[in-house]
Image (cartoon, rainbow, N blue to C red):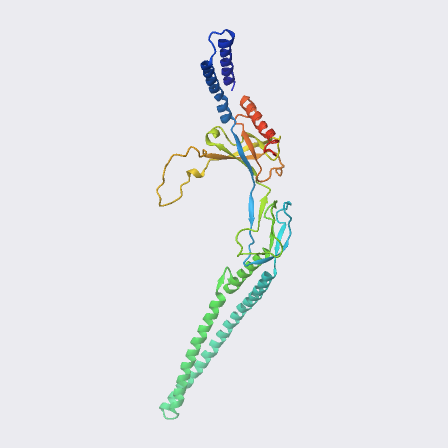
Amino acid sequence: MLLGLLLLFVYGLAVWLTFFKFKWMKFNLVWGFVTAFVGVHLLIIFLIGLRFMTPYSTDAKVIQHTIQLIPRLSEPTLVTDVLVEPNVPVKKGQPLFQFDRRPYEYKVMELEAELAKAKQDVKVLKADMEVSEQKIVKLKSDMTYARYQQKLSTELAGRGAGPEEDAQKWTAQVAADAAGIKEAQAELMRSELRYNSEINGVNTSVAAIQAKLDLARFYLDNTLMVAPDDGYIINLQVRPGMVSGIVRFGAIASFICDDGRYLLADYFQEHLKYVKPGQPVEVALDLYPGQIFNAKVEAIWKASGVGQMLPSGNLPGFEPTPPDKPQGQYAVKILFDGADQSKFPIGAQGAAAIYTGGMKGAWAALRRISIRSFTWFSWLYPMPF
């Protein structure tokens, strides 16, 4: 900077001594053009210095995180109450919208009844197991008696002391008792399988209904929508009587979060050569004419969609960029100093100057004059007439 000023001073002194003080050469149109041409090129020193030592952007905007408020309900549901006012700050967890609870309360009651029945059914399965076990004992005793009678009647019929029909009858009874035992054993096994069917120590029928009940309670809890964070809602259009749910596409409102806001400024890529996180920044917002806000560089977003190539069957084509197309830029994330961030609302626009060498020095002085001229000019622009 000092060298540029010195060169400009020496050049101006040489022109003055040559053409006006000692008049060694006659000043004419040709020499005037040459003198101006060289002088303009000397001024480029200041242009280059300002661009690289104090990058400047007039495309800066305040960014805030927004959350799309979408009802998490299983069916279209009536909005019964709106518990929030537009553009009024709310705290995390504060109620926003109340939906009709009745369908979800009825579903919870239905599943609670089914759960109670399922738990009783588990006890019934245990009792069925005991019944089947006693039935098997009885059938085995009956079969033992039938085998005795079969043996006795067969011996009597063989000696002609008894009818053959009795022997056949007890033979059939033994077969029936054997079949009855197998049937009772199968019933016992079925009851044991149902009773011992568990997941994490809980009967599967009970666990399935418990899961449905938990989901129903989840939907019941979501009939009251609360604020996901500290913030506020703008352009609130929800009214009682509106039906919202899975058949409605998109959100019913946008929630603007208080925390995490930052300034995003676009810069030409070459101007970011010396920019690093932590460097001081001055910001002039159109919302506050005549004011300058201090900030710091948080990060440089070294990424652009120009360098992205999506998977495709088409071969890429490489053509020169049209001269009327703006040069690709990178964004710089900037954080404001100070605890009160509420005065920087979402979408506020302005200019931002980064001081790569600190706030002192000739380059910084020129840039500080430039950005202050910008903010003071905001009193007049845009013109009201």
